[in-house]
Length: 396
Image (cartoon, rainbow, N blue to C red; front, side, top):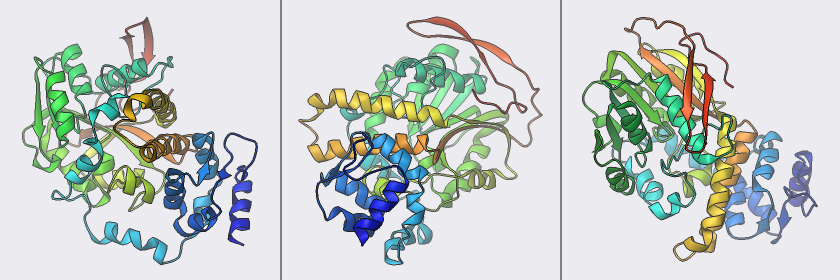
């Protein structure tokens, strides 16, 4: 009965068991059906890691699965939802717990991350594939887009909250000549970033965002807000408000969800991003009330699908030199992460937002359009960028 129900739900989503399409699921262990019924997406991911099933196109399987809304059809009982209680009762992203994500993910080893990220900026966030299919150029496009939206100038003092391996800090300091204070709690990332930015006006701070002091002309946070947690969204925005000068600009780059949630996919939080959580538009809006004016909201979601697919291609090519440090189960875990996340963006379940804000005290900026030139390593080309605060609404 359980097997037949799951087969029917998958068929409705365009996925066949042992079918001919690359996104079809080939079951290798008949206990798989009971495991999926019991553990849902957690069971789907763990059973893939355990080689209970195979699929030629995990990305497209996830896309069809999510578009078919199977996660809404298979409703769990009370016991299946007990994992939600800690997120509701405890501040899982408190200052005391904040290093969990660094210890369990970002400190896994630079050899792993550098095997699939771009050179030289090592951006672990959504690229911007505007008129290019090259990952490195797309990440330069993203960095340039952020700098343009922040209107960086040589006399700016910039705060980068969650600076990763220092790619954005180095780009801003080298190209725009500004000073950067870059905040991180990952020892592996900071060790590399300090060498990567040696000789540049970049100061690295090993501290929780709640401990940041000073005042800054521009503030940016890329790919860090997903670790803040809904109980701390307001506190994060209060820190930014306290440290941003009255006439400053703040850009938030974050993955987001279509609905307000208080947890995240259980497989993702167990194996990839512990205590991770995707904010919604409503949650961000509530967090910035009476603090900021939202000047611009740009959705880059489709670009993350392409970014993740490029990362997986790089990861697969690099696996022969990684396999001495990571086992086969880890490989399946990592490809499941990259490819099903790509499918989630393709299905429009997840989004990527760049939100530009000003303090309420700031004077209203003048609407305008600018033409900028981006110069890639392998091409010179001019592009028209929309950059109109607050009137611009369309993304390319």
